[in-house]
Image (cartoon, rainbow, N blue to C red; front, side, top):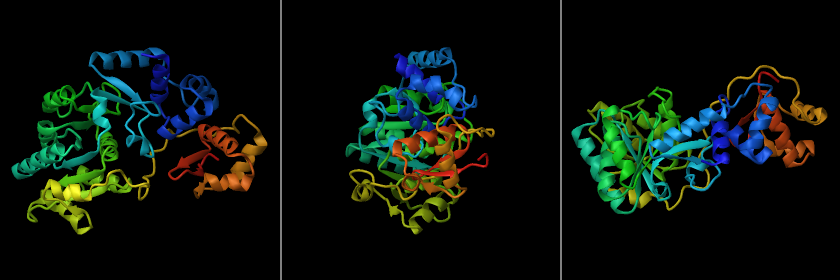
Length: 365
């Protein structure tokens, strides 16, 4: 346990501090330690990091499980995961970090999958793993579990869970989670240890499954299912989308069949996936999802720094987002000065940073 790792974990676990603010704080202050020291004053007491003892306990507990943390911006962090708009600042890992560096494809689908669907997911995962691909999924019942099992027969698999690593879910997959970690694969969790399976955590899990993969294969998905969320997120990130055709009379196949009608690649075998899977992800996602906002901030006075320059920037901004590059062109300040002032304004709750390096005033401005 290094002092920098402890500081990064404290910063990552600060309630109300999002991934983008985490990155801007490190860029502004140069280290997690300096960011932690400045944070209470810069945020007017809105953002209070947890005490060092809390982070030490979490690190020690993860180490007892045989795990470790990977931190955004440091070696070992999955490169594709870092391309998210809101990559997890800290992610817990059980197993082999090398499993996160190979070309990967996600296989997801219904929890209440048919026997035929589970067999197909198992066989497809085994065939793709035999071709050297890593299979990612969400460790759920049904298709996910079958995909993990098939992948382990021929290669590696990565499971992303929505709970803490000490709370396997579903409980009957505790053995599968342990096997994945012990047999050359990896299990990842964004949530802190002790986190229970809450509904709001599963879409965040799904975005990680999609981000780690070059493509997403959907096997048996009902309409409005979690698997379709993973498919949508994959498209937003520019990933290839595949769907296995199913019985049109089976409600479990309505969503996956709709994906094919909407242009997803039809996948009946590993060859169908390999034919369209890129060597690397597209340069740009089709569009980025709007991030979840950090905790609401009370109205605050102008942040520290030259009030004239901060006021100048505020006058240029409105409720409609504008590119930060455009702000730089209009105000004649250096890019570094603009970024510093915008960080101050963001921490004061007066501006909101949006996808595509855009900025807009909040209601507090």
